[in-house]
Structures are given as structure tokens and as C-alpha cells.
Image: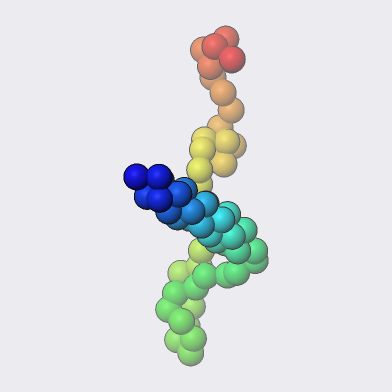
Length: 67
């Protein structure tokens, strides 16, 4: 049982490290286009949207009161 717990902790640590590395690599200036060359580019990845502030939406009155 103790060996299983150690193995699971090691796997969790490896997954955590890999997720941080992949998140860092994604933030670099890697342009994504479709279709790939030599075709003419038609679609381009511009930005990811994670929350309303990415659209420039500010907190409303009730959220300000809550915060």
C-alpha cells in the first residue's frame, strides 16, 4: 500500500511538472494558422479567452459590493 502511494505521488509530480512546461511553451509566440503552407492562410489563432476581463468587461455593481 505504501509503495502504491509513493508511485502515485511520483506520477502526480511528473504530471504537474509537464503541465507547467506545456503551459509555458504555449505562451510563447507560436502562431497557429490553418490550412498549413503552401495553401493560402484562411484562419489564424489570435487569442484565448479565459474570463470576461479578456473582452474588456468590468465587474458589475453587485460584484463590486460582493468583493
